[in-house]
Image (cartoon, rainbow, N blue to C red):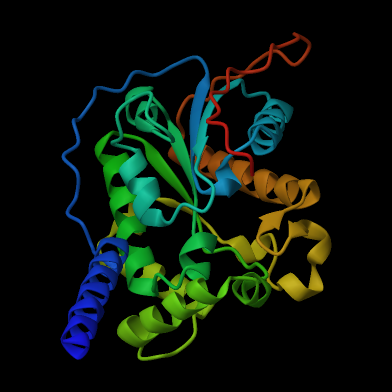
Length: 283
């Protein structure tokens, strides 16, 4: 009788764990998005979405100030969810307004550009390169459907080993199981994530309509440039300044290539800070 009960309990636990893995790593279908008519504005409207790298006000201010140096007035809205994988970031675009971490306003705010900052949580959580690439492509594709030009920052270099070494025993065990299922037991490699998403964007032609900002131009080696990081998984203010400047330069280059009218502002006029919508994060 005891053996039978043990088998039943073991089966239940395995079933629950299997369901957990399915919900965590499954590829959900694309959300139904509603096309909206775009209107040109006198200000450049920029959104930021992602994990904890997109939360807080520092990056918003850096990007706004950098545009202002080039004579551009901007309005920036940002939404970040700490530790969010690309799947959550995508789902947040369709979450009900007012719900925790909803970024639905991104799709309904007449934006010109949307910056995507994601990847560290996918790598640390052993989500797999295919998972990361799939949801990045959904995010990019749905922004384009809403006439918003995606600004995709590639998988950042960060203290990957330090971050994964700091996980608790259950998280490490989960990652080991996931790596066996997803990658035949290999440990995560950041280059695998970069190669997979680059290939998918190329195959789907999404890269033709996306501003791809290579993070290696901010930092190509975490160990050699730790001054750019606050900790193993987050940039310092100096790192954010370098990344923000690079992002702005890529957007400016695209504006000049497209010969679109750029909303300039008189540099002698004092401009109030752009409205920034922040979802509290505690990052």
